[in-house]
Length: 417
Image (cartoon, rainbow, N blue to C red):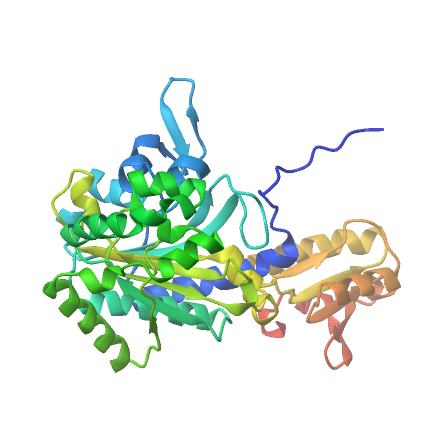
């Protein structure tokens, strides 16, 4: 028996039935992004490992446990991108986009890679749609990014979401709070999970990412970063909330929200949905005012979000329409001469922009009509030996079941379609 090679676990195929829904989401995103003034950017899936170590943080779970990194044939340390922001910032600096567009609005669509235990809504190859707004420290930039994210989720068919926001403060606030939190947890370190014991030593804020129930319980009574931010950061956060309220974006403040990437500062946010179970985040983002500076550029304010397309489909699959390839006309051809004539007609119609198909094998009338019905063809053109002799074809409307005779030479007149 021949052995069939299967796909890698956690890297699923997107089959035609679902691909139409993906297209709908992507088309919806591109339309919305254009309205908001965002332009598409495409970055490679492979980058230097150092890019993510430097931006995301060496002590994050993403870099330590989840990132696919390896030596290539040139003995370089490279990695499959686990997220989209760092590659865009790298490209932004490398190509001097700051010189071309002081306020840069960019969006991306594409696959990301993390070596996690595959489960519903969490694959090793997963897809994100996201934006990066680079160059503004205004509260309106934060609010606009959040608004765009919520509008895209709604336009894609996902409702009943919950938007949670928090403020991490500036770099100095984060640094000072790390000392406060580390000291507050000292007496309870032995009660933390093994990973959080290491986080307590190396990167204490990452304890907030832990999904262990006992660690969550301990954090419930721990100090909250939003209570330890400077007056300027508090004022900015208040303005962000006011801006969201002014455009009727509902939110709740979650003081435990920090996000799993070290580069976040200031506003952070997350959108969850009840249909996703314990891994309920469908979109997230925040402000990263220090990242461009950390990666070798001038200090530049920025914020963005990413939506997990896999999770969006899981949460709202039945509500997302499919962008199927509509068939305007299906040619039912009976006999070799009819197929010759039909093949030429097909080419002419396609030249005029008509979406049409035919079967390439000899099939019965009944079989071809069933195929036309399965393809949801709007109309069917039937040509057999008798039709060829009389220079006529039968045009059938598949919706109202009415049909009429037309001259074969008139088939290519586009007014029929």
